[in-house]
Every structure is written in structure tokens, then in C-alpha cells.
Length: 116
Length: 112
Image (cartoon, rainbow over all chains, first blue to last red; front, side, top):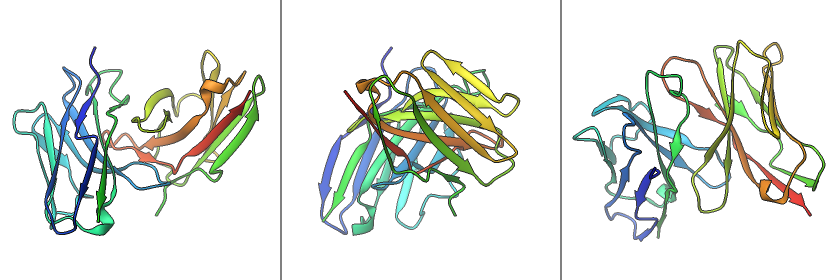
């Protein structure tokens, strides 16, 4: 079974530029999460989708961040414009909802963003 | 406001000995807890979980203990192996959805 796929793995951009990250969850996983992980910190939730609906985006900085999951499968997270403080690892995770395994989230390898 | 805390940033243990990683939480509504293991340049991997109706869950060399009154959980690895060297995160959820709050991680080094 393929795991959660994220691309790109690494991205270096100049501040004020836009950037987008892509995530393809595990097949059949209807819940998708985007996390932000700063150096030396644990993952922090940015947004959670149930199918195509964003059910929790309270931690997403909506002035510059946006996300979509149009067909309830893969998802894109965008930052426009990027700031120096956005340098971090962006993790995508997925899980099956409504079953005994609902709490087990499977993470992708992450995208390491460096804003210069 | 850090609701899940891992106060030891690092831990070194000799191969074959027991590794004990600790985690404290502040939210009494948390009722489900997980441990994740993370290698460099990879995403976290689920290790073991425990719900608040239990005080212990065991899976092979890994055992998680939960002390609800102290709002404390610990992960025991015995015997420790060099391949266990990684960063370990604990996470907690209040069953209000699938939102988990993660600790800052403990970097475990198992010395051969």
C-alpha cells in the first residue's frame, strides 16, 4: 500500500513569492490534515478536511494561507506571499474516519520550506 | 499554550537497557493518546496508542502507561535497540474530532 505522498520534498523561495505544496493521501482515507512543524517543535494542525470539507481551519492564517481538496482526494496548500517566518516543514497526514482506526494518522515525509 | 509537554529534549540509553520517555498534559478532557516515532527527513510514524479507559497498553517491546490523575503518560522501550534512535512525539486528543495536540518531542539515542 502506498503511503502519503507529498511534493516537493524541498523548496527554497524568496520572501514575498508564492509557494504551493501538494499531498496525495492513502487511498480510502477520507480525513486529511495539514500540519506545520517548526524546528524543535511538534506538528501543529493548520487545517483538517473530512472529504472535501474543511472541518477545522481555525489555525490556518487565512490572510496568506489557503488550502483546497476539491474532489476529496488530494490536496494543495498555498502560501502567498511567503514570509521569512514561514520557513518550516509542512506535513500532510491522512486517516480513516468512523472506524476503530480513526485516530491513527499516517504522515507523509513533509515539504521543507526555506524562505530567504 | 502548550497542552502537551515533553520536558526532556533528549535521552541517551545503552543498548539492551530500558528507555523511558515522558509526557505531561494539561487538558483533563484529553482521552486518547498516541506516540509517534520520527526519523530524520521522514514523517512521524505511529507507534502505539492508549485510551483513557486503560492505564497500560503493550505492543512488543513498547509499553505505554497512563496516569490520568497525574495527567502523565510514559513510553517504555525494553530492550532498547540502536534502531530505536529517533525523535519520539506524544500526542493527545479530546475526542471532539480528530485533532491531536503534539508535544515538542524527545530525541532518543541508543548507544551500541
